[in-house]
Length: 259
Length: 287
Image: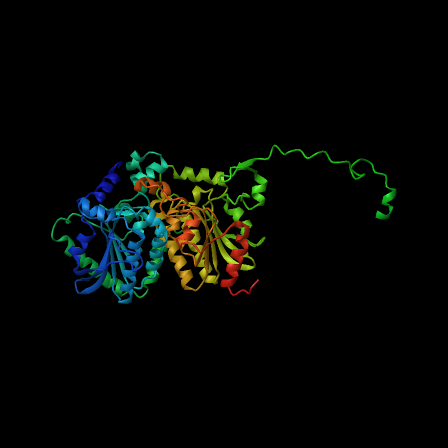
């Protein structure tokens, strides 16, 4: 058992993994990227825009890490600044206005950690997304495709359905951070990874996610079409839900509920 | 009887009006605390008499119960949800024992105290976080208590006053802790959508998952002087960016300057300020 969870953390972080843009290209047609938060800047760690899911217009938002060193630098390793979350919120509000479902792909070690991020209100940016997504009157689906790092990942995951790829992780803190705070020893990250219950299997058992997406077919041409059909079916189902927002509220209300 | 006072023969010095009382002994025994700002040693009783502040203006931390008695109208506080406690959902190594130790040391069973109270005559729902309980970290019980407090306030049409102090989400409860950010935010949003007033007072320190949820969601956000408020920890930022942090980084005044707090609220007049704002939002007349 020991070390197994950390092995998955390694896979979730590995450079060869499909990134947000790969999912967008694989699943949607006519993706058109929309830039900027209309307040400060455009954050390249978050990619968002409009696209077709089969025949249905949708809003797509993805955290993008980039594939090579240059891209990764430019994308800040997929660590969004406040303007990234504000762009995402702007696009979600736009989706609500035009009755488009929202699909998010999440892959971040966490919200960007820097002086500018604090000066521009990283905490507020995340908090606003949590509030607004809870009452966004259109179906929202989030898929964790790699790293699901804490509040920075949750800020795009207040959804009606949340899925994780088989080798994705979702955690309140990085195993390294947890080990160094708890045991003053960041080399015990593997132990921390076990304790944190951060794998897709753990998250499913805890009821945090609806389902795990198998990665068996991820290198075959069948993977993305299958995911496309699945998303389309889920959205059809969610569109029929007349108490969508109550169900979303109760989905999160249930976590850690006593009595 | 007093008429006959002049006939009364005093039995001792004291009854005679006393001689000069023995000079007051310099109280050597009283514990003192050094102010981290002005470096003066101050007797504890004087700190307490000044709502845990130093004469230089430095604000010491306050326990949740101390705050409640400081801010609420006397005898008005009624505690709620004190039976909701964390139950180690992940069976995290060492957590159950840690909870036990902290409960014994802090005399509290969780990191937030909720209830109803009146402040300056206005009834409200109040939550106050406890720095002495795992630095106010948010696990399932903290999230549940705060969520219930907001749901209760929404149902009863009451405003909410919240004092935040927190190191963030409680990592020993993993994803369950993380989800409390969304859960509490949902409850705040419903309260807000019902047209009700929510006032937060950010106190030292308010960081991580609490900053990124209900701490920053108030209609009006006050911050105590000098309080550290931020999302990422200052040391982590310094290490990852390898930059020297600007002076006063993440302090309450920094927040005000960058537009993320409405005002600084020193304890000297914090109570009357909170009372006035509550009254203003809850149909009360000018004091």
